[in-house]
Image (cartoon, rainbow, N blue to C red):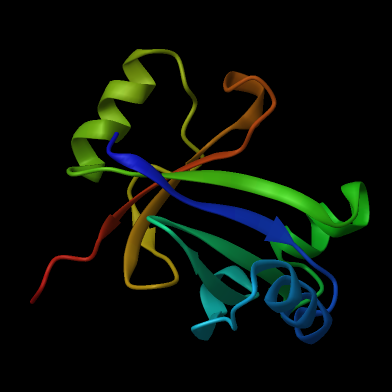
Length: 135
């Protein structure tokens, strides 16, 4: 793993959270993006070499909506940048971390992403991500 790519924070109201984090970090978000396949709207703030990703549900049955209903607002996941997402998925699975999908999928911010179950990672939802290859 290369670095912490971002920390994902689940929020109920993206506009209010954008305002809060802009005041906290002293800068505006650089991107809002919808990931329809995940039922989520995201907003990104750069912070040095890492980012903060705010996640708001765009559908009532999305994973973020379920997270918010169960746990409320707060840290949702930590994402690590990797060079080769397929090799890293195999390595982590061999180490006992349970993937939540069989293959990487398209995520926000131009990334391929894969998630690992929090029960196998000390209660933390882990995401690994890699820049999408140029086509």
